[in-house]
Image 1 (cartoon, helix red, strand yellow):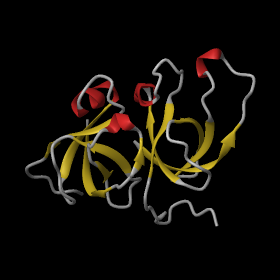
Image 2 (cartoon, rainbow over the protein chains, first blue to last red; image 1 turned 90 degrees about the vertical axis):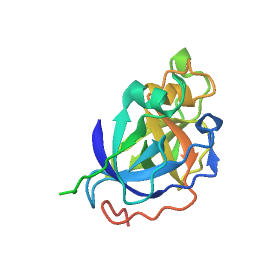
Image 3 (cartoon, helix red, strand yellow; image 1 turned 120 degrees about the vertical axis):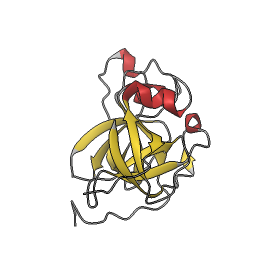
Image 4 (cartoon, one colour; image 1 turned 135 degrees about the horizontal axis):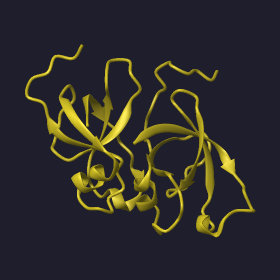
Length: 83
Length: 88
């Protein structure tokens, strides 16, 4: 799993049905790093440091084995100062 | 998931049956790397899209038996490329 920081919500009105109503958030490992998109399974706000999981675990964390996610936020870190 | 831009459609008439009749798109990621994805939403060239990779790409397709490892799962309403690879 990886530590990342939530930047903002990513709005995609035209998206596949399988995503349901889960919010998609832009996350970065470090400021200026490449932004990735994660499914929010815990309810984060921009600025939170979070734990992201990938591969098949990302699907189950987002809802079901068939959920089309390859990166899901599974936890908000209580205290973490980014380098 | 990754953020990519649709460069163009890709036609490959001679293909394995596992790809069925899925339309293919050439995509460019934020670092300028090209890749090919199946398209589950019908994204036209020039649009910024969200892609799912690995086995999630197969579940993103209406028919998960399609053999893909990258699928476009949504078109981003608004995204500005903040530097990095500027393609002029």
